[in-house]
Length: 298
Ligand code: AMP
Ligand code: MG
Image (cartoon, rainbow, N blue to C red; front, side, top):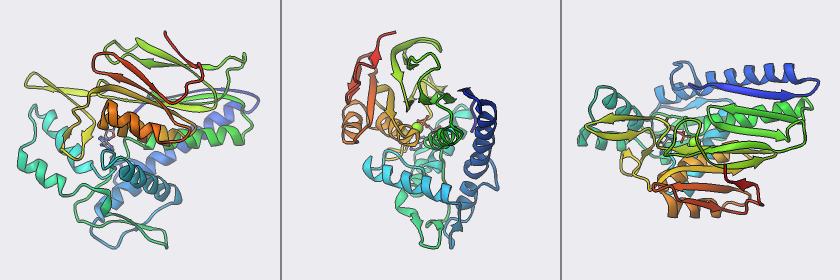
């Protein structure tokens, strides 16, 4: 998944549960990676415009959820944004930005309206040239799979971190909650702006500061606004979502980042059980939903 995975697992079955999680994350990567030509995600792209592909229940489940977030976010979150993501990635790697007509051509391929589900388990991208990118939801879905494995193994204390996508089971062995730092978007790697005391939940951040390229004196980050066809010009610097489901936290943090402070807050507010910490471009912090005293300064 292009990231580093760390696990902290306690209990009698800790070692075997951690091994099972490592194996499961590798299995999901082989289904979902856009960089593995045989993955189900790659196949769906390669056969776009055709009759569709019979995919695993896991893949169908993530894609159906993703389409739901696309609808709820008014298209801000879109797993079919791959052509635009690739266009920007390749142009910036060459030290340039894409031309308007290239952006327009890719935009015509983007939209979950073209992502179709059939009762026999087939999934199809309806327009030839459409492609998928699960970069904004796959790590969350994998973290949920990890949590299920820990619970089935009877583990009562664990923390899995997939490149900043954190999910915890229970509390730490000493009975205290897990401290998850929310990074200060304006600071360096180790600087945090808030701490969240986590227990049986996931904490996921999406931000423009994580990965970006410089071109012509401007910064371009890796999160695209599918509606404009360009890197999202968000007034948020980072959005952290806290939820029982890591897939929800992953998808909705990306969606809220694209939407910005106002609309992003509204999106999370409407979700029962989800909470968010939005950090604005000037460092202002806005909490959405009841934190129950678990959010504090660093
Ligand atoms: P995240 O770090 O979870 O916000 O995910 C960012 C990654 O998701 C990017 O590196 C792209 O691979 C992909 N992506 C970029 N923009 C979008 C978008 N608007 N909707 C869905 N996925 C996106
Ligand atoms: Mg995400």
